Length: 250
Image (cartoon, helix red, strand yellow):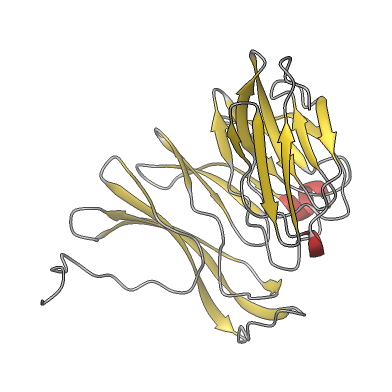
């Protein structure tokens, strides 16, 4: 009747990203607003001045182990903070901010190992609702939805940040995370942007197949789900069932 006992509480600032837990640590992003106000403006952008932060907490008691912060103005709709849950890969944590700042940090100390700025490095215009597609690690590669001409999808060396390949152009990059499936005896990397869903060869970025499924307002959000040879996709104003051929084509 008294509810579940609270073991600990710690204050955080605003954000939409969930926590990631690994190795007895909690990794979380938030936004410390210093000027401006997020008005949940669905049809326009709000300008904020503040800092994006990556926090690492001790899972036992919530104490702060380290924090990485950087100044990051926002010009977004629903500008309340980061959207992407951090991606953990052993001794590295990958944190992606709402305006396209990608950080590879040491999970023990928060040391910056490498970083990318999608706007400056790729000429990507941040979508109106921010960068929401969390990075995906597979093997030695880190896959990201970046944006920009020819670089909606980019594969990085997860240890160095060196670009391995870039692929696809679109009217909008969308918000759907890169998703790996296996079919027809090979892996496929699914990228659903504002104009179509695409299957790429994860090692080269070459297109295996593409289907022109276009969500309203570029709002591809949910990760595609595979069951047998069927691939289910759903977004704002668009849904489809795709049947994959035995060789992996659509």
